[in-house]
Structure formats: C-alpha cells, structure tokens
Length: 401
Length: 199
Image 1 (cartoon, each protein chain N blue to C red):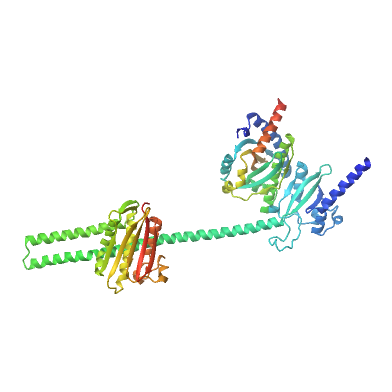
Image 2 (image 1 turned 90 degrees about the vertical axis):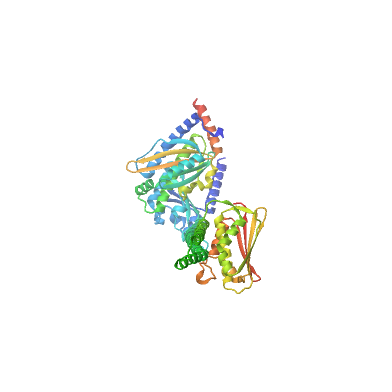
C-alpha cells in the first residue's frame, strides 16, 4: 500500500514534471524574495540559461531590466490575497527579455508576454510565474492600430476635402446667383430697348410739334397715354423679372403652358432679332406641383443657350421646339434646336462648373446650375444629347414633389 | 424578468457579504500601496444595462481610465473599474511610476486586487470558486462606450460604488460587477440559502 502510494506519488510527480517541461509556457517558481526555485525547459531554451545556473539566484539578478519594486509588489499581493496577479503584454510588454527574430512579428524585437503570478505554496511563500508568448497577438494589435490610425488620418483628410468642396459649392452658388442677376439685367435691357425708343420717339414728336406750334390737346393726350402705357409696361417687366428671379421656398401648382409663355416673354425680343422660330406643344391644362421660379430659371437658361448658339450661325430656318409628354408620375420636357449641335468631347463636360464654350461671355455656371436645381431642388433628371446638327435637352420631373 | 430582481432581503444579504468582501479588499489595497487606506462602505445597486449607460454618461464629465477583468465559475461575469484621471495621477505619484505603461499596469493591478478580493470573498461566502482572466485596459473613449456591443451581453448589473481614500492623496474609483441573467439567478438561489440559514 505504502509502496503503491509512493509509486503513485512518484508517477504523478514525474508526470507533472514532464508536463512542466513540455508545456509551451515559461514557468518560474519564486519565493517572496524573488529567489528562483524552479526554472522550466521553456525558460532554459528561450533565455539560454540552464536551470542549474538559475536556481538560488534572484530573478532580478539574472535579468536586470526587471523592476524589482513592481515585481515584489505583485508577488506580495498574490501571496497576501491568495489570488493571481498579472503583467499584461498590452501595458507591460514583457517581463523577461527574450529577443524575437521573426519576419512576421516585425513590430517587436522582444517577445511580448502575459505573466500570471499565481500563489503556489502559502506556507513557504512561493509563487509560480507563468509566461505566455503574446507576440503574435500584440503584433496583430499593433498592425491593427497602425491601420486604424491610417484610416483615421485618411478620414480626416476626406472631411477636410469635403469641407472645402462644400465651401466651393457655396461659392459657386453665390457666383451663379450674380451671374443670373447679370443675365436678368441684360434681358431687361433687351426688353426695354423698344419701349424706351418708343417713348423717345413720342417725346421727340411732342417737341417738334410744339416748336412747329402744331401740338393740340388731342395729340398731347394720345401721346401722354401711350407714354403712360409704355412706362407701365416697363414697370411690369421689372416686377416680372424680380418675381421670377427671387428663389421661392413654396411649392405651387404650375401650369406648364404659362411657364413657357413666361419664358418666351423674357426671350421673345432676342428671338425676333435673330429670326428664330419658336414652337411649343403643350396640353394647356397640364400642370405640376413644383418650385416655379427655379424651373423657370432653368428653362430660360436652356433656351438662352439655344439662342446664343444661333447667334454665330447662318442657318436658314432657325427653330426651337418644345414638347411635353405626360406619364403617370412624371412629365418629360424636350427642348430641341437645330443650331448645329454639340461636339461629343464637349458634351461630356457640359454640366461641369466653370465650363463654357462662350469664351468671355459665359460664366460656365448656367448648365451646372440647371443640373443642381433639377436634381437637388426639383428631384428630377436632365440629359443633353446631340445629333443631326441639333441639340436635344430632356428634363424629367416628378408631377409632385 | 421579474425573477431576476433582488428582493429587499436578498439585497441586504448581498450588501452584508459585500461589506465583508470589501473589508478584506481594503486591507489588501492598503498593503499594495503601502499606505493607510480606507474604503467607504460600498453602495450596492442592481441596475439594467440601460441605467448603467446613464451612469457611464454621468462619468463623461471628467476623463476616466476604464479597465475590465473577466471572472469565471458558477458565478461569472466581468468587472469594470473606473478611475478618474486625477486619481490615476495620484496613484502614479504615490507608486513613483515613471511611464504611462507603468500607470496602466498599476491601474490593472488595482482592478485585479479589487475584482479578485471582492469576487473571491463573495464566492467563498457562497461556497463556490472563481478564476480570473487577465485584466485589460479598454482604450475606448467614454462617449463611445455605448457602441461597445459586448455590453449588450449583460441585462442586469450589480454596481458597487466606492471611494478609496488615502491619508494624503485622494484616490477615487468606481467598480461595476457585470453579470448575466443566469449568474443573477444563481446568486439569488445562493442568497436565499444563506437567508434560510439565518432564520
């Protein structure tokens, strides 16, 4: 019986010893003065120090990088509390300096270790230090952190660029507003030329008649009446323009035929000047709910582009045709001209801001603004195609936004 | 859900057990820091994860270090320890630490001491054993803590709120013991056994 027990004890001891040498962890037994009582195979191999040379020495003697005060504190705490204390690889990196020479673990030249200090023998005040190699994990963490830092940096860069783009966009909008204002003034000038010359003529007539002393009451009445009407017309024009170029925030029901009549009204003088024939094919009752002035601004811009294209051409029968088709949920506006068409290479860039073919007369913002308005404000689509010496602008708008 | 709420009696017993556990923790912390330390009587609350987030939110005002440590066994879960920057700096000064890593290490040690002394003693009283994983410092800014999905693992939380006081320096910390429902129902059974023995 006693023999059996001894045998059993021997077997267990030898088994445990074998496990301790076979295990893939560093195992050191220390007393409360940090003197080494056991040093396993793993430790021998990794530190190139034999157990026989380590036994009886203080751990801090073998490795002078260890902070004695901290280690003592941890050992004492473990013994005092009879629960493990730790060093973690993430904060302490390593306790025992073991050089690593691995390609895959490029971040660390020393093995990163988790160390558990486990109370082992309360009577003799012994603790066992268990070292676990965490270099792979630490390396992956370091890699991850490096990537995260990189992503953060890229993200910040992206945000800065986004801010810049937004600022530029705002600037563009401001620029396009002043450009629209300029266009408006030039259109008013066009509209006013004829009535102003009418007034001048009437006034000249009155003067001449007065000098010739042929001015009678009826003459005077009729001339003043005409002048008054014309001045009223001038004032109406201003009101119209001001109304239509104020961006309005309210959606309203809009008869499309009225919208096109309005755009014609603003542009008819110029069209007459260049002999441009204008046909419009719209169901008189067709209406949609949208932002009136924004749409008008876009339509005027597109028709104005067609007019400008005709200015430099000697085409015989100049034509601008507008047709509108109605679908269940949307309408499709087609504006076509025969002013020569657009080159394919230009077509690609036509919606880009500051792109213009009109040299110094163009701001390059017209079609860009049309696109912004139609997509962002009116929730529609716009496309431009060119064939057979003509240009076709197609605008798709929802019936209700 | 209701059977996971602690009754007044159960709470009393738990508070009593925690006081005992805390007593031993105080001595160990004092030993570790080689200074006379006192721990205020812990304030124990059981709250839902949602309420816990609110408590975290209240901490956002100042800068905190946040560390966690898992414990396993019949009674298992995780402890979360908060120590504010000022306290951490006091701790660093007291232990004459040189670097940020040393400070992290000291905070982890404090976490470990508090977690293990608390849970070991609690486990002892309830005749079970616990084992501890390595603690770690969670480097998540507090304002992002709600995004740490693992918190969703816990529905109820035992919160132990305490002050650590030193003779000359003030070190203040909050420790939260997070447990899952099954551990809470295990805890309730154990607390009731103790209650019956008392009666």
